[in-house]
Amino acid sequence: MDLAQYIDHTLLKPEATVNDVMRLCREAAENRFAAVCINPGYVDLAAHLLAGTEVKVATVIGFPLGATLTSVKVSETQEAVMRKADELDMVIHIGAAKAGAWEAVTDDIRAVVKAAEDKIVKVIIETCLLSEEEKKRACQAVLDSGAHFVKTSTGFAGGGATEEDVRLLRAIAGDRIKVKASGGIRNRQQAECMIAAGADRLGTSAGVAIVKS
Image 1 (cartoon, one colour):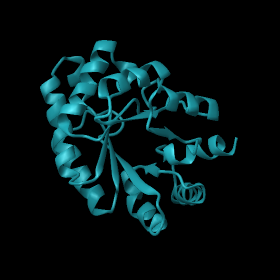
Image 2 (spheres, one colour):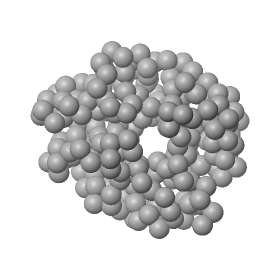
Image 3 (spheres, helix red, strand yellow):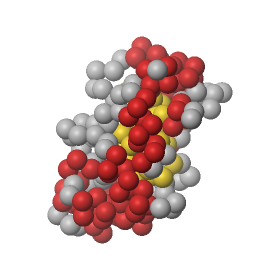
Image 4 (cartoon, helix red, strand yellow):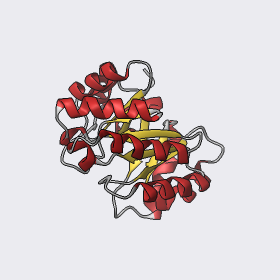
């Protein structure tokens, strides 16, 4: 198994510096990871550093709370695409999901998908904050919106990916969209278990340690 091709090498800490992002991109290129995932302010830098490699540049939208206005998420998306982001990892409106306002959740995602044009959109549903039924409904909203991935977690809400959640999302998504497991994946065993459960992509800040172990 080529684990590197599953990994979004991730650095979303608020204290991340230019030097940290430069190191992240260098590691991603050296290990041939699928993508780097960085905050929007570093998209230009990452796109420049990774030009000519196969590593994609992913950034986050409405991160980490998902509670920004849809129009703001759209603006973030358009700016990220202009700055040469390849992939957008957006957070759903979690409060709307908890309230059962699924049309609003779906419309929010759909607006970002439209703004992203032909770029990959991964939708973070923050599984640790949802009931099992809400996870199912959230995954269906992702399917209905035209997005490309359903993603478990931001890693900022007190919980991350679990094998059970990945299996649940895979069962609902089938082969229509992909599944990204993110949050708390620290070693090769965890990574392989997530892939076995159905993950197509892994979001982790421990990518180098995982592939070197």
